[in-house]
Image (cartoon, rainbow, N blue to C red; front, side, top):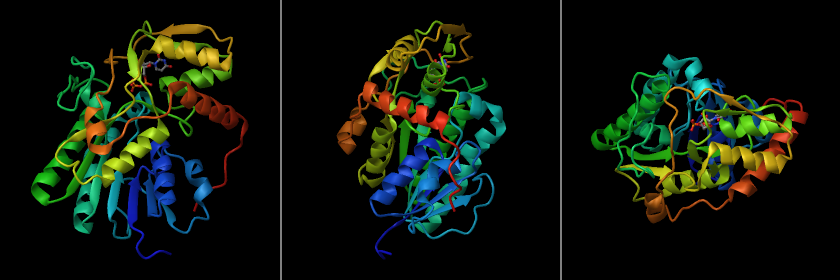
Length: 325
Ligand code: UDP
């Protein structure tokens, strides 16, 4: 094994984004430990790495004391349920994952002298009154509603991270991740892209919440992971968060039409009530990421959706993969 290869911890490494990040880190020569509670992450996402000598999987929940681990040079914290139905299923645990769990990882990174990257979220902007959302916008979050366990948890995680940067000499990077999609999303994730694709493939009714005029901006997972890697590597990205997302904004109705057309589904659209505190508009201002990281998304929505639809079509047919070590 290369003695120079750095040790990297990916908390949430069995998740949708985390597992793609693990792949990208391994491809660039790192030694990677993926830590995951498997609450929403899946062993299946890492099954292809079961023979990889530079990789180890550890099942653990970051709200509990951390197990014995190597000394890391880099710590990525992507551990948290991220889709509204999943993070609302156990809201207290969601909040503690972002607060207690992040604290444990920050302490660990400080003790190791590692650089720390926190996966934050566009949800810190709540139902935004500024559009598109730059990092300087403080947001419009309902602190007591059903989304608060996630939104306020992530806001508190950012606070902790920057307090460690200011007071404890930790090198901190914070990525505010906007809606991301791609292979390895769960079919039962509950978010619009996975729901609509799975419904369309099954010729089942496609669910549109509210009037479908609310907007989102969808980033393909490989673009997002490239942004995370660049942010972690960037020497000049301390002192504030960085938005990572695709600025192409569309309504939910437009997304549904596109997926329907691409899958050739005969599914009807059915309307469901708009969830409480569902943001009306969302689009990242990525000027900071462009300037600091030279980063912007490359994968067109149509191209990313094609790959995601193909993956879900396979997933629906394929049995579970064998368990990773
Ligand atoms: N949505 C929808 N149908 C679904 C799932 C979600 O119309 O089957 C809507 C949801 O109300 C929201 C948008 O799609 O306005 C994006 O929701 P998602 O859960 O994907 O992400 P988030 O709300 O966290 O941005």
